[in-house]
Image (cartoon, rainbow, N blue to C red):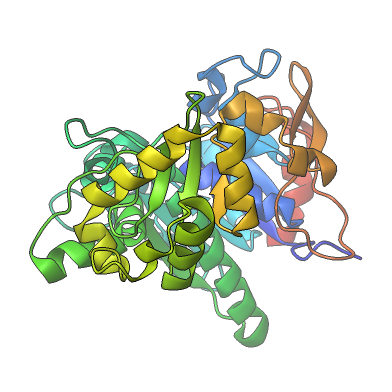
Length: 382
């Protein structure tokens, strides 16, 4: 069966992570993604590292299944080629700074003046308009501005989230918006101008603690090892020095935890812990009881009790342990891709749509598709 986006042409003037990760999802679903890169330099994410046998891990992650063409969109001849490619595209996406994109005439509304049926998507740090529009906006900058860093860490030290949540969240909103626009276009023929900002994406992801703080007129302290609004829900140490993640999210869970893990049914009706609000209010008392119970017996005993009680718990895995995760390996969630420097193993995409062939498995070298590619695709716009 054909992949869902078979026949869709995407032209991407993209770099780093936010737009490239969005278009990689489109490529995984069968779209033909033409990545327009600077001549001789390309997407600067190509140079982030050499972890994948000489190729950047970031670049392999975000650019599988695409084709690369080098164009200098400021050069008149190359700009003509670029404009013709956009004219034949179903989707265009860019993540230049708003001012640079405006000067180049590649903002979504600018392109749709010429191509009203185009689905055009702008991804930027702060969005178009407002006092911060043209500020530089890398992932960590938006983690800070969007509330993620303030919510992460210990009471004494705020820390960043350990992966690119600003890039990824905006990429996924761009991806889902493009899918929605393609669906509408099938029915009506209409194009769309889409604008996604990294700040608004992270603000949406941090909305629940923000609403809690605004509603209570109080910012909850960072809790480091545990959830700020649900208890007990976090990391707890065991006698052998390892940690286990325990998740109790309802009174029914609490009853099971008290009976089977803490071995004290009186705690179920203890007024300090009767419901989640009480458990959060009395978190110091609660964690003292948990720590005492967990340190009194072996880690094997605690894990056995958690399993017997049906209490949600999990190991804390680092990247190397995750790569060998027994569930991922049992479900065959890995595949080989070719890169400019050799083969590499990566995760399969998590879509898992029935009766659809797997994704493309090639990571393009800079400009490797220059010869003949433009001529083939230009025919679409004529």
